[in-house]
Picture (cartoon, rainbow, N blue to C red):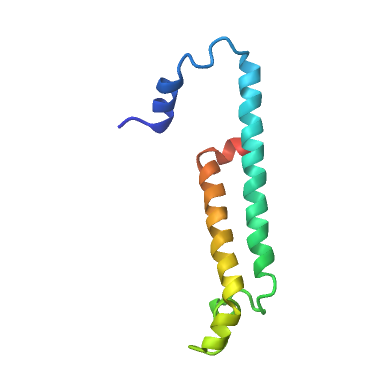
Length: 110
C-alpha cells in the first residue's frame, strides 16, 4: 500500500528544486500556522454559539432544548430555534473542514 506522503513526494519530486530549503520550510510553517489559527477560530465559534446552553452543559438534553425545542414536538419552538440550529450545522461543517486540513500534521502544527 502506497502512503499518501510517499505519493505526494513522488508527485512533487523535483518541483521544489532550485528553491532554498529554508524558504520551503518557512512556507510550510506559515501554512501550518494559518491552518492551526483557522481551526482554533472555528472551534471558538462553536463554543461561542453554545455559550447560552443552560447548565449543566454536560447533559445532552440541555443542547436539545437550546437547538431544538424544550417540549418534544413543539413546532413553534423548533421554528424559533432554527437559526441557531442552522448556525450550528454550518459552524460544525467549517470546523470539520478546518480539522481535516490539519489532521495529518497536528504535531508539526503544535
